[in-house]
Length: 513
Image (cartoon, rainbow, N blue to C red; front, side, top):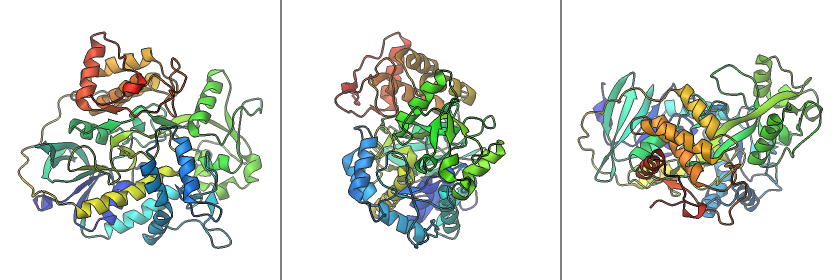
């Protein structure tokens, strides 16, 4: 590739969503940005409806936002991370404005703020009604394309990290069916979550956790992999293989109610997401329909308040001004990921992570609504600042790329495996069965590795907490403990399972040996 060798030594940012774009923009040094699709496409950030949570209202404060975040996280938030990220919320909104994002404003000229579940104040800054993610991506994509020091490689994805003497020495990139090797002492994984490994998800198809697999194979610690958040209200029907259309939390915040076929309400619509999702799933399992009724809340003007959702409804022949919407939970966000400090540094020197791919400690066991865009932008800034100050080693030879080894586990098989075992309700038998089924493939297949890590972490966590619910261990342990997995420990646990040895580590032993 013409000019490719000239990029050697530059930091490589893997991911074309909000986190990747922001990291590149906020770092004042040349860098390479990998985007599997054209910038802005197939990125979960572009689908974000609700907005960005920040304590900018007259009746709000950072301390209130912190308290709401800690309460939703069910004991597993890292307080220092919560304080740092939530405390940067007002500056994040201002920073996005400076990059060209246009937020919705009220008649009095102040930001129009939505209320969402488990927030004690209306603090969700939004754009285009329910099109915040699309507006943010529009502005940032334009800025990136206008910034000459950022080399954008579209149609390119991170395939593997090259590690020498215990630190990142380069990356392998897949582009157009060709494997390329680039020397670099710094890689930022901003590849998003793993929702697309599940059958019903709001995630784009590219969200298969492949960045997590790259980090694990490089030796990084992955934390809290079992915590998968199910959004309570995705539209029940949609095109096969496509992401489920989300009905934003803000619709319930505006007063929409959840009812069954009799019109009876059966849960608190503004409870934390894990609580509402389980209530809906239980009602569906009991043979009921579940409907979101926004008719009285939006007074015949649903499309004015939520134009994107209205379009999704119209495409399915639904009119929220005239009828309740059939909804069901869908995988929406992964709270776990690559363990990082507040600078975004992983446990492998030269490897940073941010956004949904990272486990910063902000979300704990259950992400507070609209804290994801907040974390994405704020932590991109932390990583950018750290990379600017970092002294990177001179690039050296990295050898030829390693070819892929055979066929992997099909996505349909992953859907069946994780959908049965690692959904809203989990138990030991199902998780162990899924982990054993994936075990033969983890050495060479990244999706199988990530799926197995989710199942193993869930298998070890013999309690119910936040987004993780075990029907055989429905109570919450008195002490909240993070789970941590490495590739080596994953392989050891899978060998034991495949040999018929049960995973018996109790919740208070969830540590890397």
